[in-house]
Image 1 (cartoon, helix red, strand yellow):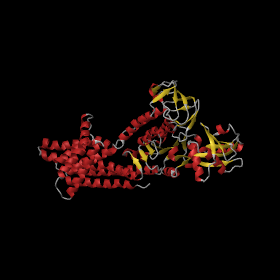
Image 2 (cartoon, helix red, strand yellow):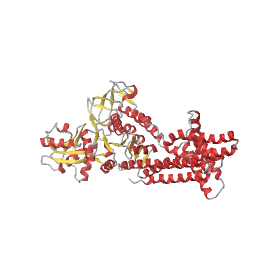
Image 3 (cartoon, helix red, strand yellow):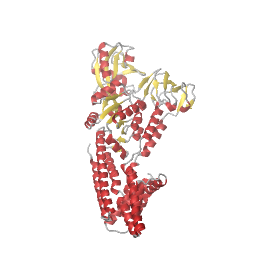
Image 4 (tube, helix red, strand yellow):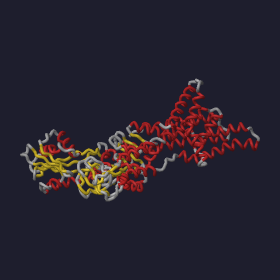
Length: 619
């Protein structure tokens, strides 16, 4: 915990304890507690005021708070001084929330990237020393260290870090592979096509860093207001303290007192509270729903969002392949097709194998006994069925099945129909006869449809960005009513789409879960990460994290952002009006200090109560 946070906490505790003791009319230690609250809470405020004055020659809000605190101490209003200092320090502490965590996230991602590569001659080098056209070796289980083209070997590659898709891609000579992806089961020789600094994985890191730096710092209305308000109040106070004694021989102490009264009255206590109390309540209310918001500026950004872009896999869908259709041919039953498929797949570690075995278990279908299983990389597998006359059975894609069987027009027609629905087609064959088709697809989250509908009802446009193919993307989008669909995207292409959407809709939120989503999360106006099961870098890069993965929290967040912005405007407007009234009264001598302080305290209470309503905003 930073020293600034520790000082703010101690300041707040001292202020509350002193106020309580004062209310109970226990005078012992009250003044000391108020002074501790002022000194600790005001340490960084005083420092900022001094820096602004000396380096920028700018009378910032910190300067006015400092002068007002000093003035309040001079006229023995310690409680007012402590309140102003503490609440202002609290406002700054809230705005600093989460900044350091984002920096650590990029550092963690860099540490996870491949550091060395093995040349074909066996020599190991740092990735930055590998040149284009070099041939590198990648063994089963290794991370691919650099972008390149497969020259020798075949394997299934888990590209989730790049595309976000859960199903490994089969790679053979001539296919592109990416740094940071995982080689699952084959030996590969890869010709390097990009140096490490230019790899797709390196670009992900670079884009995250660039997007985070390019985000404009949050400028509260109070800071802009201070550029004009603070110098004006300070000049007025100086004129009040100097002109009457110098020009008219008035008592300097009397007019200095009046000038300090003006400064104390002018110090915008309720105004300072107006934004942080609203933000704190909104963030606290969101946390009850399992939503972590990293700072107040993202609530304001949410209020301005006109479009929400979603990643597909593990965001709108569960990222868990499931058997959705079973079609039998050649006089076989669906149960026989599943029994054959499960019998072969019980030997396999492929992600689709699990979905087939889960389907068999769910429907109580016993697997056929198989032996002599053989995995055929990138195509499927085969085995001998002991209960089917020791015939060879095959399961896999058309590349495998076409080597032993001929697909009938009916099989081709059914397969084409299923593929257009975005499903992965798996064929099952008994020697030369195709006995069935399994259609496997990712499943939608239960709340996806309702979440999209609620966003549309709020006047928010939606889009889908995915590394998956166009058929799969279109199918999911059609189920959800999403019209803007962008498929087969690499991470840098997702960033381009987000930038285009920002030009069209001005303010765009992005929802995603994986490493591949981090650049687009950072580029969007508001990045929203799926928490449970999502990658660490996505969670850290995002401005908001859904820890319970409930997409219904996204329309809730839009409503919360809008209500927060309205509440902040109400609080600021009311604070300024009350302040303006008492400043005018003070200038003409029609109010006393205790009345002004009472009005300001009352206004502060109303601001707090109005802000606290955000804690219970409904979804």
